[in-house]
Length: 244
Ligand code: PGA
Image (cartoon, rainbow, N blue to C red; front, top):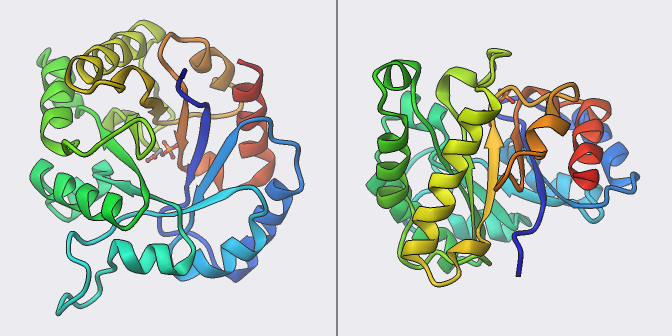
């Protein structure tokens, strides 16, 4: 089975009840590929009611099911709220909350046990790219963050160079191709069905560059931040993916 195309939107810490109108607009479209929106946790349950065929996900979860962890949210809670997916190991979590590969992997195990599909993020900083370490960083984040229980059915990997997130800068097509080929080879070598794991590119994907990015080998979709907040922009990206 070839990897399924997925257009994933990460609203980050953006979105109030009024933002559900953007979901209404997305749900009313003929999208032509799988679409996922990860709103802030406060909007997950109402988002499900507005989402139609669109999947709703969380942006993080704790590795434990329950307990004394003020402010955290468990995978079972996300599932109970109506989520089907969860983003894990986003570089903003790694940077702002010091998340390690081992923590991301433990969260992924918990998410899989709760029945969630994980979108596990990897990607180098600008300093790491300048030092020629990009492929080593991706390989070691994949090895450490993706648990042994990962399958093509429960896991999607997003390559998001940290320096491309929210900056308007993107890698060259060759740089994206090189990273995605490494991810495909690494996952195929480790997992029986690794060749079928969906691989997303993320970092300043916009309506204007989406088609070109979706033409690159082993790019099966995108994880989109800023341009996922408006249905008109995200809809154009979804259309580019559906046509790719
Ligand atoms: P961006 O964010 O599309 O705003 O660059 C991508 C992401 O962080 O997932």
